Length: 371
Length: 98
Image (cartoon, rainbow over all chains, first blue to last red; front, side, top):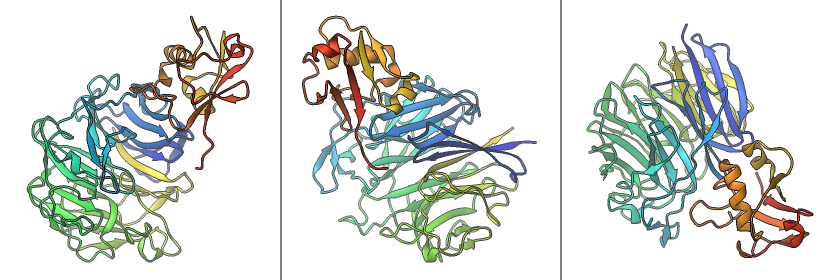
């Protein structure tokens, strides 16, 4: 029987949760890299035992750890992320120019076909790539250099490149998202880039419909319909059906359209999940109830999923990389909270159980479907 | 033989227990000690000082002989007691929340 491995990054280490295909009994292993912030752990689609972990610390900087055996053992690989050429400046919080400074890796996106090729989204926002399994990293500087970089600015969490989507059909196409700059697309494997933010509206920037400056929190895509993108913005849930050329709002009847992650069902391209948060100034769930919202219509109409989730006295947040789906049938859905719970659903969100309850604050969740 | 004390997270990363002992040729400076340390334990590159600028990371300090040597030049000689191995060159992580 196939199984699932859930990779969890937390404020104080990484954890690996494993189950068989029933997803009813889980083994919890960790912490790996105890005491370090693990922003992200992700496995290679081409080799599920090849994992990459971003290990960082305000004291001692960035480490990249690689596992070749599904997380049982790890070894550090290159941690040198040097911007290409003279880095230049972006906007600081107060609107003054501020030099680009590397702080950490927020997200790894391994190639669909090559375990040694991985993209890294970093703070201050830039895209790096390794083609040798992490032995060396090189910036794809066409993103920062395409022209709008000096106008990007940090969100409260830092100026991070947090989302990388590798198009499953057009091998040269990729999408990234940056807080707070917006979404960008490359059609030549990351050499050149264009902003794709038309239709976004952000009242917190001087021109609410500016080409860049939008605080995009997350983008999701279904592999069978790659030109359709779903976005959770700072406020607003958005949808594009033309690979980001134009966006429209699909927040519909959500109790709040503020939130961080967004997911698409593994087998249903019009089934979408969001995790509403009360507001940008109150980062916890509305009405003290932990509710996942599911749309089976590609947005606009949403239903609350509550079975097995706390419906009183709950004040957790779900961060932007802290949700995932598996590829089993029924689709499994997972998310982690700042309260240290990792919840899983083995019935596409109809019901939930806490796989583990008392981890450090969860930064990221990824699900691997194992053969 | 130069004795270097590392904070717990860096000992774990470098897979060492207790102090690290290093042979440093020539004048014993903080820069020279860190060069030898990073050559012996490449995983420590970037953890104590920046990869590019070689500046000490903000939350890391250098102590020896009861003194804070963090702000002296990386090329300045360390105290004779450190150079002789009588005293330990301490790499210290700042006390901070979290």
